[in-house]
Amino acid sequence: MARIIVGSWMVRYPLGAAMSWVLQYLTGLQRLGHEVFFVEKALYWGECFDPEQQIMTNDASYGLNVVRNVLASIDMQKRICFVDYDGNYHGLGKNEIEDIFRSADLFIDMGTHGAWLQEAEKTCIKIFIDGDPGFVQMKMEMKKREGKFLREYDFYFSNGKNIGTPECTIPTAGIEWLTLYHPVDTALYQPQPLPADGMFTSIMNWQSFDMVEFEGKQYGNKDIEFPKFMELPRFTKARLELAVAGKNVPEDQLSGYGWHLRNPHQVTISLDSFIDYVIASAGEFSVCKHCYVTTYSGWFSDRSAVYLALGRPVVMQETGFSRHLPCGNGLFAVNDIEEAVSAFDNILSNPRHHSKCAREIAEEYLETTRILQSSLNKIGL
Image (cartoon, rainbow, N blue to C red; front, top):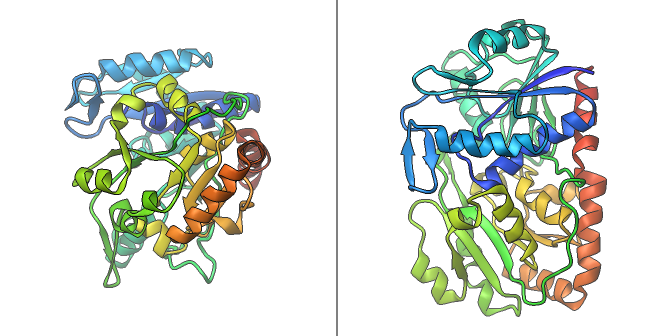
């Protein structure tokens, strides 16, 4: 049994889909028999989102309460440490967590921006997991060219399965990138019967952050790719719904083309509401960030993994993930409206078959214990 610390963000953005992403790692590592801790820090003013008041704040009490309840469901409520913007420790105290870092076998950094690297100096192995392939590596490459310091980890993993291959244009920044797909705990998310009148849904952010410019080209978000599929509802019998957040969402245009719109914070206000939303869906239709698509990154969504685990077929814009996951039954990689329509026709002609295949893909290719054990083997743990 290893002592493993996972650093990420849940308290600062306590919405169901975001928490689900981290939860898969925590439960998977525990199922493999390891002692697991969760750590998080607020580095900047106003980082904590309170979805009830719809404000960004320094008050982490809402997120702390939500996350403690989620971790209590997996018996981890006493193995959390959150440091707020004012430097106050919640859960495990400063001395306790520093002792745990000194005795830990592994620190997994999943988006802490290096906030815990000082504490992790004495930890045996430190790994970085990149969930934004392309954006992360381009920024690292630019820093490297400018002679700026890059944080040091023992191993680097990315969700971009094609990084380092001739087809993928993402720079490596001189790093050997190991790869993994964000896993799903299929024991946690059991398949459910398909709803009689479900829609194909997507929980998405229209514009997550500013574009990145690298070597004279700009790399952006879903707002750049979505226009390729804007007219899709007019060409398919499938009913399509978006729970869409972010800046500059063209709600009137989307509605005019036949997209049903939902408030994303309502459908993901909790982990349970996120799961209920997926269960009520006929499947998922997902457009990907421009950077993932244009670089042929091979990226695949953690949310889509949950859809598959619950027996919900997924139709996703191609990023190169079809090189690594079986497509055509339960999962479809599409490049344009015509291919998306064909995928929906296929699913609607035999929904039970595609539901069964969706679950099988999750079990065989995305199961958390399978992916995490393979990743631990790669680092010699």
